Length: 458
Image 1 (tube, rainbow, N blue to C red):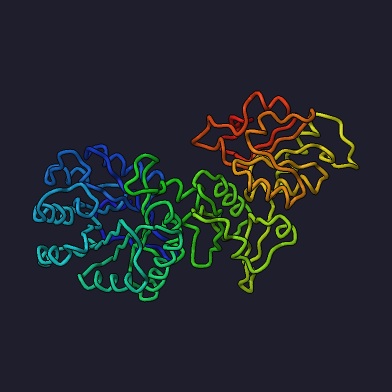
Image 2: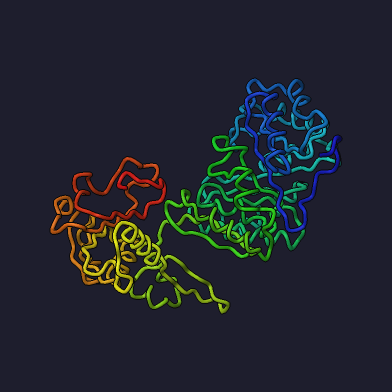
């Protein structure tokens, strides 16, 4: 980009800058990572100089800030008391940040706790071409909206060009507070970086662009994160198409725990782009998914019969309607497998009168069991907690077994088995809900687990 230091770039209208946070151990490696970040599509880089081994500002900063360089930079020299690496007095750190300004850094980051002290140290020496980010980090929780707005005012009063607040999510709805703060600041035309850390706050690092955040942080690649559950530059730019997200972008997502393994964001975001639909699909980590039915204003008749949902749609009137499509996909896959291995009468169900064993008693198990019953199968439910197996069996008109009983269950040949639990899912790929010996009794085996594609059970 620019070969000489100029004014710091403003976030394009409706667009949040993508900042690659760099944590290399040597100045040469960090300088090389700046070029790599540019190639990946980052707009700016954060140089965490405290990560450099034996960092010497007058020796290392000229290497890092030499012109021409491909991207604007934020220089951060974070002390240990704010989650960084520097363990010393403020004066040497302040002098390093001033030197970074003088050498052409477009941004310098200073902690709110010492912002007034730093401004006194600068004594008007900050170049106009350098923007000062005053940052606050809460590594324990996310304060209330009122507390966050008060904090914004306090940070702004220090003389900050850009306000930065990073909090920690203990529940996924903590991010909504940060979004309210971003909207408030956008209305006041106050540049703000507002993010929520850890996996429950992951969506804030993408949706901040919808609500007016100045920039969001990303790692250069997996394994080089500077904060918990930080996305990579490639994920933001390619997977989530963050540059195409704006105020009117519709938000979709998959709710679960765990949820980070899901391929749904890849599939759905590609589908949205292929039809030109202004939407983004995200993973929502939630600790309590069984309340989903109770959150709905209405249920599709099939979802009501199953007693579980996998999709919630918000209608134009604001009401939430629950649906279940799991049973369609599962039963269709099982029927396809049967059809591929034996001649079939197209006028009758391939599952009619077949003995169909379902392992599990949660939402997915309910859907599969319901679908099998609707197709005329004789359904058996096996679960680690026998009471739950009995409950589901009673609901769908089947029988219940314990998992230990299932090991020796062999009333007839040609049975069908469906695992509707997370057993065998990454990272526990060597686990199986049933022994190899017991599997001899089944002609078709179906597994809801899709990572890995071929589980230990299959």
